[in-house]
Image 1 (cartoon, one colour):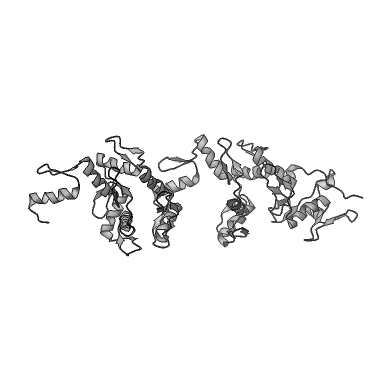
Image 2 (cartoon, helix red, strand yellow):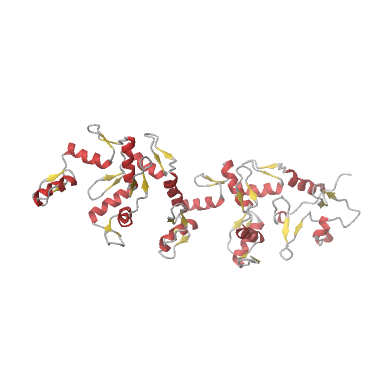
Length: 456
């Protein structure tokens, strides 16, 4: 006689709680035990049966099916077959859209909703819809505020046992989930799954507006705000709004002055981890971005983009007062202060004011004597990185600034600018005593000594 097959399992049961092994579990909040669910019978007795009735055959006349690997007992052979896949790793149910495979048909059914967008379970309090009943159950706790699971170390409370278990690993440092490709360890299975997409390139979350795909659902959620204009995170200090909580946290450090990311080499602190990563390249000498035209290397992509304008002569930023154009927006901002006379940066030591923050930083080194930029060829040190860059051209012989009129090349931009005045006849520096004009400030200084009788 053929083995008995179970009645159809209701979806509500199958979405109780799926363990990592693929078995249907329901957490017993009081005892901490887990009950393995088989199928419901149509009889009242089966409805009232306990978990032990399911795991252990209490009626000798009933046939049971045992797992030879772990000894677990099942009432139906189909349940045993499904369970055996937790040992073999077999995943016979594949998604026809993205190819992802599953050990259970019900898991595939739930997964398909990520493609169809179907959300069958709706919160009666706020109207938000979910693809799984279990997610709705968890969501409801945001309305009730229920947090039954408390950390015994720091007493932080959680709405789910699994969240508490994840939290405990912040105390123990345990990272039980390892990437089989690169060996990196993670605190949760979810973080491992997200990490695996860096190896597979999988991007299962797609924007329905522009078609852009993402590896994480949260990244898609933030991206959607580009289309909707939504900025739900507001700074309580200045009222500025942001698309993501991470952007708000970064902004708040402007007000608090917090700099949680510290360089282990020199001790300098930064408000952003990306700025620290960029700073570290000063110590390591790493320059991963190369100019395809001249081969020059740069520490960050923005520096390369700025450099490329030397070759293209692109100057997209124009002064509305005098019409002068600049390669960089910061150069235009700095230039505008020449018209307004604004000097918003003050030295706390001597009170001298400056037009930009970099000028103040450079000036501060006259007080501290700091020279953090060292030539690797001759060991000479400099207060400014730009001075080191210009100095390096003595060793390399590089002359990247070329006169378009006569073709003469120069190692520094200011030398090219000075040279151009031989073609244009421009003499912007005037003697206040006799009115004579000069091409550069040093020529004017020399001339002034003729009035003061100062000998050079």
